[in-house]
Image (cartoon, rainbow, N blue to C red; front, side, top):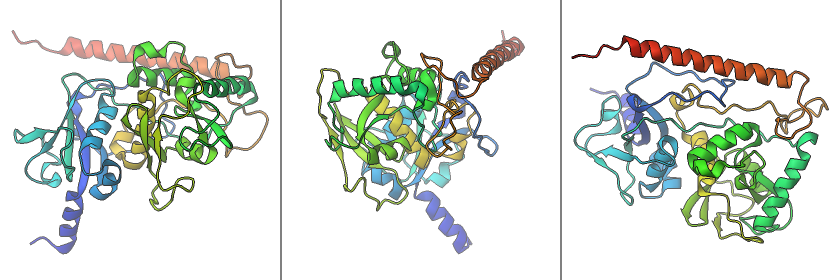
Length: 367
């Protein structure tokens, strides 16, 4: 007979929603713009990598009554601009299927299906490179060296949207908010735009490009910056704001809810592409629901340049810096350290190519 504690654990387990992928579909993440400054520990690998975990109640706050949110999030993680399908089991519970491959009685989800507790598995015909994460703990400061770029960033957004918050319409206490953080750098911004918007859109993209920014009230910017407020795409230029605070009773800047719809435009340029909002929304979802196994995937975090943060001290010898038209490094050996980092990256890639070649040579092809 199962004791009461085991029964309660099983019931709790069966009320969860999981998004997973089979490890055989995963391709290693390139290490060009990643770091391991915040390593995670994980248990021994299983046949599946569980990516998202949350209770039906918690995920239902964002998903509503249908599986549309699950399908969207699974694609944002596994194939933001590609094809793929999501399947779930028609019989049994998540506990029954947790360590088993999907069976013939699993069915493909379609938009509008009811959201139920259980396991949702993403599948595609090609290899998957998981979307990378940004470990953003606090707000990066604009240095003396990047003030010119920051001012241009603000002017470009004002030309596009007018001098108003795209959410509230307010014209004071505004921040030119970065949906892709400055600390990821130009290389990270280009990688994100490539994956979530398309390779053609990366032309000229840098960490102060207006494509990755919007005007927000300062109170909203603080939340967006820390991935506790995300923009969920509805249609066209219409987005719903989702509050990812643990305390769901906390309102956003005094408002119960927001709809971002056709904001003020002073120019004839469009809003940032949907893919930029989608990448930021994924960071919000991951901060709240990502599993430790997802966070422990090698190379899953973007490299974060050592820029000063809002909660750092005000010493004059620490400045935000990147070689793109900037004038002052954060410390004297910064360029040399970046050179060493690049050489280390090339060495790792060379060693990886050698390992692949050795593995390929060892494969026996049967006649």
